[in-house]
Image 1 (cartoon, rainbow, N blue to C red):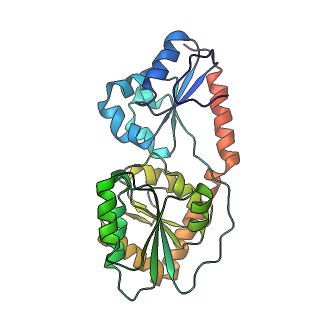
Image 2 (cartoon, rainbow, N blue to C red):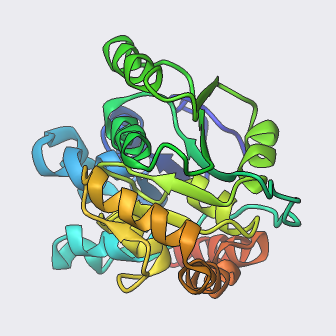
Image 3 (spheres, helix red, strand yellow):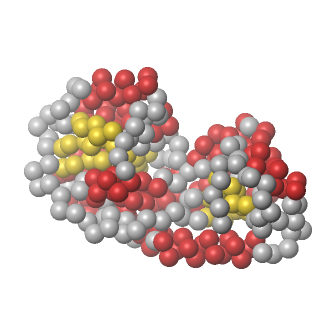
Length: 285
């Protein structure tokens, strides 16, 4: 097995491609050279909720792929019946971490994601600013500055509250350690294909407050009690206050996340990938 940014032209038995649009040239070249060899395509959030709607190359990738891999269960609703028939869900995984000792003086929030519009960090910071000034919360923001204009807005808004702490880009290991020392993960994204950071939080015993989008609902369920409307800082503020002040609500969030942990184990992901490989061994029609 090899990992390549673009297919090198090697005589591979199958291709597993990531991104319908970005991998379109490689998928087309492989399918043309080896029409009887299978192609599996992993669909990300930008694929499902943007590119396959408007981009001809992404649409061509859907046609050429023999299997479509979704990272969360609600992604199938973005596919026509023809393509839904080729789809399967493979949840990503993370190694479980023992919950860390958390601050008793502060209620700590984690916001993880590089600063780009799709991650909508401004909604989380606006929610922080709405919280009572004497509420002992801290917001730790992990992520690099990929969008300069957005980063400037984040810095200006964050400077208005001493409870906001930008940590910059951290390694995966350091990020996971930060998450597990927090009481909540905030996930205000505009679109997600199946956020790995959600998995990293849940497998560390950290519940989530997230935007009510398909990519999040498909991970924890549509009836999970921690969703808020996209961009709704006021509602996110209300949920944070409930988590801080109402032990029963916080316990409910934690219980609901714990019920989903088995979906995000390496063993579960490995079994799903093995199932994919078995499917791709079937003769092409």
